[in-house]
Length: 499
Ligand SMILES: *Cc1c(COP(=O)(O)O)cnc(C)c1O
Image (cartoon, rainbow, N blue to C red; front, side, top):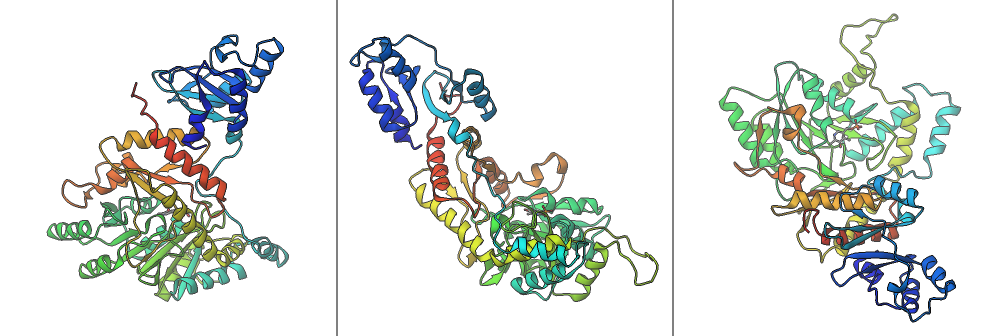
């Protein structure tokens, strides 16, 4: 429902029954909101109310105020979707108006939309996955290790343009292995993008090392080269050489590798590229995930392609990737019995899931295209909405738009973001804040942090005002339009505190 439709639902108490019936017909929402001259909600009117009034002999030219009075069932701007559903069920109604602090009608939630959830990023299967899984069953290769795992590794490596890949049970497992292969251990310092999912940082801590977080740059939101430079210089001044740098490619877009790589090289710091969100993206024509000494992908359920759960560690160094395979299968030594020298893990991807992954890889380019179209639709449809800045796609980048994200700017950005997220949630649309930066997480309280510029904390501002919209490759045109109408209307809504 757009704002014109919502406005058309609001009628004065002087409206005749006849006119109300025509308006109900034209708006087709099954309800009208009777409001006074200040917009305060007086009551609702449904088809049933008009039918009962007619049967009771109220003439068609009588005003709505002639109907027997009843107080409207409504909720405030604080209400959650759960509150709305509870009210619908308790009162046996299918529409719940939302009123502001002054009692003015500002929104309407319908039961129909509550049965049609729009997800942030849901799995999207192609046509081959079931057959490939079937193949795993019929060839009895259910255990980890098997032809699908080998083929999936080869196919991902070929796609990314690196020679070697090791499939893992998750992206997090691949990050853990990657850091260990780079020699990270107790007492080490590891640089890490602050604006990311917690899994980028946790393996650093779990290996006994200390993460030092680095801010984002304002355009593409990825690691700020100028903050990185300051971090490297400052740490060197203190006699610290970071053991590695976890550089994250956010929301389907590569970090600024041409600025980042020479810096890391100059200081002798290897890059572990966290490409969990950027499979299918390119930077200056080169695939995301091919820049780091090692790089990590994720095939978790919400990622651009999925194996339900899974990951991949890729790189140019054959010995490292072979070592990763050994560590991921309990680090068994080549002996007839079970011989162990190294500390290993159970991190290997199963053959069944690799079969799903192979099917998904075949549709990756379509998935990238579909997500980019979702983003393009949003940007065009919301072009007239002021104060909303999309994550940029700087020159040289081909972003997958894994998630379509924008940031609201200004002093009240966080309040407006929260109001919008509440509004979308009431309308059964799953949207999320941008990642909460690691340096603001209680888990990493007290960690060192290098801001984009002294006094300019970019990732904190992106978190405060940032919103990720539903971005799945399986969103249809009606869902995209619904999201756009809701975002436009949600941003126009008064804030909770406004009376
Ligand atoms: C999803 C994600 C991970 C973790 O991948 P899993 O497969 O869920 O373990 C790591 N880093 C980033 C940036 C991610 O988005």
